[in-house]
Length: 252
Ligand SMILES: CC(C)(COP(=O)(O)OP(=O)(O)OC[C@H]1O[C@@H](n2cnc3c(N)ncnc32)[C@H](O)[C@@H]1OP(=O)(O)O)[C@@H](O)C(=O)NCCC(=O)NCCS
Image 1 (cartoon, rainbow, N blue to C red):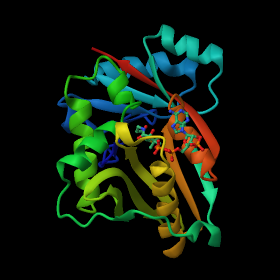
Image 2: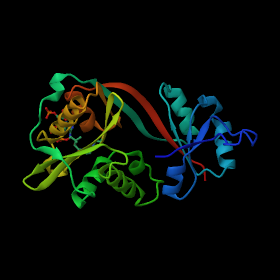
Image 3: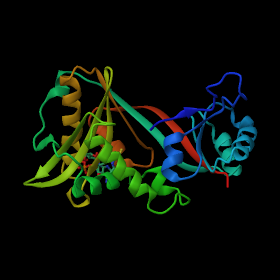
């Protein structure tokens, strides 16, 4: 996703706030101005919200580690909707990570087929874009469909791996290199095929690809409420490195 900062390109122009970023990609996708709140302490938030409203921003995201229960209560009293506890998990890769898993192969189709799109939408079951009741209808599904299309065409992922039962795709995982760190993007297993080890096979396959391609560690971000996903990653050797509450502020 492309993001533009609140700073003007002309340094002599009016100085914008360092407390937020206007999000170009998100604004275009939703069809109204969207911003991300950056720095202010919760006590300074009111001023930032006033500035965002003045600029016509309709939706602002706020993700920040280390908020106390009192901070969260204050933010919610100011209209923030707690939509997620963004949870980052990481693991160090080792030769053991390179053990091959069965039934998983690279997806080589030119575009995402219906099975992959369905899995991408399932992978967002706990997404803040699905859980926030104010997100316009259809937008969550459209977002995750675009995510898998842009993964298959390699704009935002290097590899898409799938688990098949005969010819049917039962699960998928997307992978991206960030230097020496491998990042898992989307993961899902078809509803009726869960609990049979397919998710484990997919994560292990991704880790073996990361390791084989020279990456030293891997990372995944999921939602704090997503117990099946959290348990899957813990079982595969990941540990939680950060938990950040995420709120949405609707300003008009
Ligand atoms: C998360 C998901 C991919 C797991 O796939 P799966 O094939 O069912 O996973 P596995 O069968 O390999 O299970 C691996 C471990 O995950 C945990 N797990 C799986 N389902 C679980 C559930 N419903 N509740 C709690 N833990 C669960 C267990 O620890 C399990 O190990 P065990 O079988 O030894 O107890 C699947 O539930 C899914 O597609 N969920 C919806 C999409 C999603 O949330 N994706 C994650 C986005 S970050």
